[in-house]
Length: 553
Image (cartoon, one colour):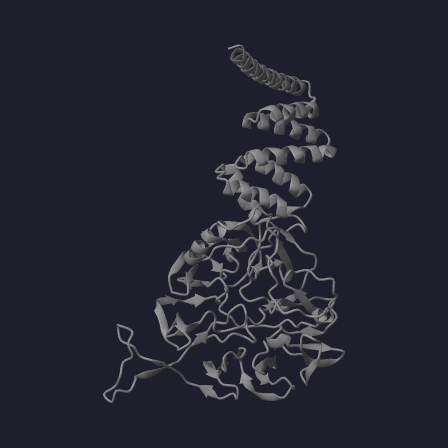
């Protein structure tokens, strides 16, 4: 009986002690909060922040985190050497309430002040995934996602990206710039062409015009001293324009055939050319190729004649659109003009869907291309389905989730929702690449590289959306990298100095023009970018969108 009574007494004393501890903690908590509030009134913001932090060590409340953040922000505004304390408080608050937009914005802005855009976006993205719906936060998130900086260097002409490098030229000379838009190499060559298959490219070096491979081994010597345009080397053929006409050469520098006003690269044994206002395909020997397709019935079955033989007809194109990668076939599709309108065809020359357009831009990796009807530009996929209705003055096809569009004579960029995410401010634009880089015309006939501060993989199709849901379940809580994998075969340092040549190119790309746009501040994150219909070449002419000028009607 006595033992039982002792146990009850000890237990009761334990509960009393526990309750007393809790009461002491509550009292201390209230004191810390009250002192912090008093310090704030006195303008002692650093001390107020420390007291709020002590209070949060006792009891976590979102409202007190808000007060702590406010105190540290004011302390930081007074003295910037309190950055570390403010950052620690912001990280502490964001970890406790990741969905709170104010905490995410605070920590993001602190990282931006250190030019750390990867971490700045990481915390915004974390808050978004946690369900933050605040309008100010959403606007800041969008602004950060599409912010960019202007890279050092300006050029008078350029060749679009091919096999990981841009060909550029300015007063200093010509050379190659890698996909990230940054290079310490000087431009030492007289001219350069686009980098083709196996890293082959035509350039003029030490008074000689040569075809060089990626290891800087000379494959051929050419007689051409100052070509007007250089095409894309493929399948042992390269188109070169001199005195207004294209001719094809082999890797050794031998002229094989020519006399064309426009000429593409070779692809799958064919090239598209234009001669005497007629567009047609040729084989590797320069002979015209017939484009025959099988006529099918409404059920998709081949029609047959009375002898049971499949009925075939020949295509006669008025124009064939060249794509940003210099090809005329992309993702198994060809954009070509027949009977006055552009349609989508497969590699068997069969028309896909009833899609038609007055003009088109080339097919990029996203598979969503720009087209025009009645003077307005919109976007369609390769099934012929309209993705965004025509409403723009001019447009470029989507690449890495962004497309250049023209409004009020300036070019900007939209996302796949049709939202203007980089404000119109350029005279011309090219296409964004995997590195988040795009070349734009910042002032008339002056081209610069812009680079997104954040490179995030965009979702292009419903299938990829479903796949992304599965991937999200596997995501680790790690900060995303700012860049993606390289797009190209490696080249030696000296190879990147190879000369580039500006050239002209006929293309169905939208025209550029208008008044001077404001110049983007170097290294500062801005919201702009322009897309070039076909990259302009020297003298303001557009360089070849393909391994030569695209065949157009």
